[in-house]
Amino acid sequence: MKVIGLAGWSGAGKTTLLKRVIPHLLNEGLRVSVIKHAHHEFDVDIPGKDSWVHRQSGATEVLVSSGRRWALMHELRGAAEPRLPELLKKMSPVDLVIVEGFKREPHRKIEVHRAANQKPLLFPDDPGVVGIATDTRVETRLPTAHLDDVAAVATLLQRSAISVEEVLAKSEV
Image (cartoon, rainbow, N blue to C red):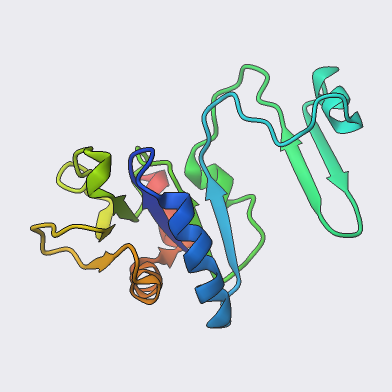
């Protein structure tokens, strides 16, 4: 299982890019999963539904299962947010895990940069950035791809990915 991040400021288009890149990777025969960092007040559950009631009642974990999917929700209940290596250990094996966000974690990542966002690039200060997907010219020796070139971005992600074991080993140092 290989891992690569996709990081950038809010509004850069990370999710939009992933929405286009994932089907491309699937067409190449890869199995792809995503770990998405969210702000602390997100919810995947619907207030009033049984699973929501169970969590609100104090359950640490609630697993919901059906004939189409299952989801495990884990409430931290004041514990520290898990780091990326801990989350990677929870993933089922696939060919490629794309980590969206987690820009402050030290894993390898492709920066998503949109000129209209008017935010600074992450790469000069983040040694984890190993490539850039952008809609503008960037002075760098890092490999780059245009945001609209889905095939080039997919290739950049695949070539830059490293094994989950390498990510876990780096976190133990």
